[in-house]
Amino acid sequence: MSSKSLEISYDFPFFMNEELDEIFKAHEKVSFQKGDFILEEGKMANEYYILDKGLARSFVNDFNGNEVTTHFFAENEIIIEVLSLFQRIPSQENIVCITDCECWRLDYDTFQDLFHKIPNLREWGRSWMSQQLFAYKQRSVEMFTLSATRRYLNLLEQKCQVIQFAPLKQIASYLGVTDTSLSRIRKELVSHTKKN
Image (cartoon, rainbow, N blue to C red; front, side):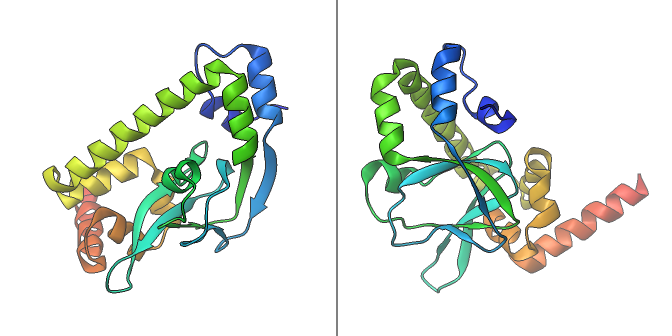
């Protein structure tokens, strides 16, 4: 069993072919429909997913009860709530499908078995976690150092399917701006493009 999304997610130079085969075989193909919750706040994450097709997002509810998007998951990315999964605590976040999604699912117990059995999986895990930490740190700094327009353009560059499929309100909350501000930014960019 092989899939482009699995190959991309587990792209690590030290894996041997037989190790990758075992890891790939441990995943189960699952489908979700648009609007389905992959994980709900207050429940414990018992698996992670590799997104084969579709788009999903994680969000929290702020102190006023408004949804704030914390992350968008695009194709070939790992859908995970790290704190809940590895610390075995209820999730503070919700993860929901923006479109119909096809995923590869790996449950926590199977991951733990493989983690102890395949040393290279531990190394891959360390490498993946450090990349994620870097990305989250960069995003938190950019929220203060980049203009809203630049943050929008970065999102457009990095995950164009978000702009294509996610509602304006979700994108605005992710960028830390109001819907009105985001509408204005988009109009300005369109008129700027037309002038050039």
